[in-house]
Image 1 (cartoon, helix red, strand yellow):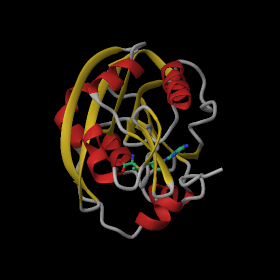
Image 2 (image 1 turned 180 degrees about the horizontal axis):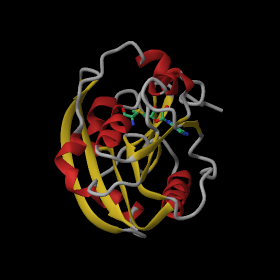
Image 3 (image 1 turned 60 degrees about the horizontal axis):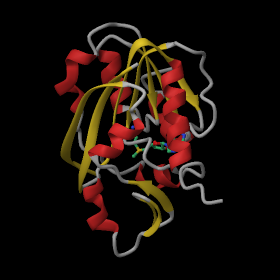
Image 4 (image 1 turned 180 degrees about the vertical axis):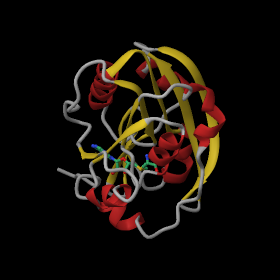
Length: 202
Ligand SMILES: C[S@@+](CC[C@H](N)C(=O)[O-])C[C@H]1O[C@@H](n2cnc3c(N)ncnc32)[C@H](O)[C@@H]1O
């Protein structure tokens, strides 16, 4: 089975590249207005974990990549290697916030629904699921090479990728109260990128 992230291909390729500082959550600071416990799911090298810790939260930084988690260890001892396709190793109603920046858009429809259900399970009542996913505009960049697997789901250059429009986000988050959905354009690893930010309440 192809397992680009499980085999750590992503961070082998990106770990020495410079990641532009795009901490978009600063614009949404009002949603990080309590102290408490936050899970940064698919945290990568942890630039968001770090900022959420600065906001005053205890953060569990979780990723499938040990290369990335080794970087996070420099400022957060609370790290865990997990595969979010499996049952998340946390009890019900544990977290005040689950944060997932650009990390839940690699999966089949069935896996995506399971992951979002799991996120909902581990959030406290009134807890927030905050994050972002790739926008459908990204299709222009991959259309020459991508194989269509399913609706808005592709296999491109060795990895699966899901692209979202606003209706997709609304559909996947339908068990939550959706507080905000915003479209955003940014630069990441020197490439222009469109993504959709969501803030949802359990
Ligand atoms: C595009 S990076 C985003 C990283 C970080 N959230 C950020 O904003 O820079 C996607 C991250 O998801 C992680 N990831 C991919 N599949 C995963 C899985 N099945 N379980 C846990 N983490 C996964 C990758 O290792 C990678 O760190």
